[in-house]
Structure formats: C-alpha cells, structure tokens
Length: 216
Ligand SMILES: Nc1ncnc2c1ncn2[C@@H]1O[C@H](COP(=O)(O)OP(=O)(O)O)[C@@H](O)[C@H]1O
Ligand SMILES: Cc1cn([C@H]2C[C@H](O)[C@@H](COP(=O)(O)O)O2)c(=O)[nH]c1=O
Image (cartoon, rainbow, N blue to C red; front, side, top):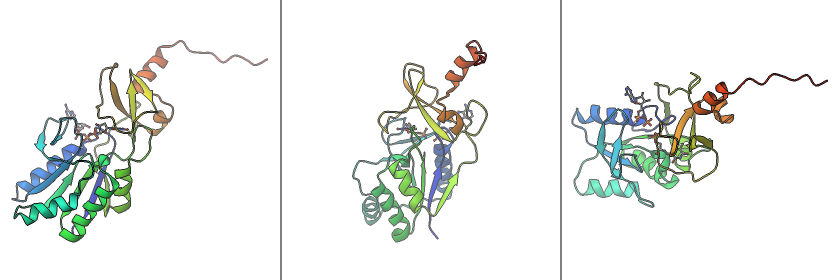
C-alpha cells in the first residue's frame, strides 16, 4: 500500500540527508522520483544536506497544486514512481492534502521531511496537516543534541546571539551562524523554555556566583 510518511525532527537532525538517501536507493533500482522542495538554504530548486550532497528539485510556489502538477507530468508520458517533499513545513495545508491525494488516487508513496514546530514551539501549518494526515510519522534516529547533552527537541532562533520568541514564522537560516546574523540552535525543551542557548549558558557560567542572602 502506498503511504504518506512524515519524517520529522528538529533542524540539523539529518532529514535532508535521509531524503537524498531514499532518492539514491530508489533511483539505483531504476525508479524515478518527483522531488519537491521550498526555500532550501542552497537556493531555488535544490534539495541539499549539510553533508554536502545536493540534488535538483521542483521549487514549490505559493498556491501551486501538487496533485495537478503530478497528473500533468504523468499525462505527458513522463515518469514519477514516488514523491519526496523536503522542507515540508513550508508547504500550505492544502498542498499537504494534495500530497495525500497523490498517495490515494495516483498510488505513489510520498515521503515528506520537515521540522514540526517553529522557533516559538508552535506548529507550522504544513506540519500540522502532515500530523493530521500522514499514515506514519517517523522520528529520525540520529538525535540532534542540546548543548547540555540531552536530546534536542526544539528549535531556537537567535538574533545577535540572543534567543528571540517574536518575529515572522518563516526566516530561512542555519545553525552555527555568526552572532550578528539570524541563526538557529537546537535545544532540549528545558533550555528552550528557559531561553538558555549555549552562549547564554557560557555567559552564566562565567558570571560570579550569587550567594543566597538570609531574609532576616
Ligand atoms: N562534518 C560532518 N561530519 C559528519 N556528519 C555531519 C557533518 N556535518 C553535518 N553532519 C550530519 O548531518 C546532519 C545534518 O543533516 P541535514 O540533512 O542537513 O539535516 P536537516 O535536513 O535535518 O536539517 C547533522 O545532524 C550531522 O549528523
Ligand atoms: C525553527 C524555524 C526554522 N525556519 C527555517 C530555517 C531553515 O531554513 C528551515 C529548516 O531547515 P532544516 O533543513 O530543517 O535545517 O526552516 C523557519 O523559517 N522558522 C522557524 O521558526
């Protein structure tokens, strides 16, 4: 049975790498994939991994009907045996419905990859729809780590090195950016709640200890 699978995790946990591996293994067996992406850091029409691999992809536009795109593609006599959608958090909920229809009506597997929540730990609309519709949700096995060593479950946004909790939901960016840029850092929930990034933890460790003062 064809499936809609949502591979989800924090930033930098290997989602795009896995997408490229699925693509490689299937194309090595003569299958042809339709690869969608949106706003990859490597630029328009690219699916890239931090491990250095990159492949061409169809850049999804606002309002584009992904089901109609595939029907049109197939009716021109071109092949698509399965679908990969990277950066799926940036897709509109209607586009996730169209991907579900690709599974049900065209009989193709759809592998979607994306982060579930934004820098405020709120669901992206596209990810919410994936959680609602996916046949399976897979959490990646290579866990990204918080600076404290715990599994990273949340994405923090930093501006000038400081964690922020207000701003536009979508700002394309990367982890390990220099302090004067908009950047991201993955954290465990405890440190996301306390807004304690690695830099904030270092600064706190360097400040002199405050001794408790007796109240009387
Ligand atoms: N120099 C490196 N050596 C080994 N692994 C690396 C290196 N750089 C990045 N990685 C791996 O790549 C992962 C990020 O992969 P990527 O597919 O770009 O993530 P995502 O799409 O989830 O943001 C990192 O978590 C790490 O496991
Ligand atoms: C948390 C968060 C992230 N983004 C952007 C930043 C990156 O461009 C992508 C995630 O890519 P990755 O391959 O998973 O690292 O999403 C955003 O726009 N808003 C956010 O809140």
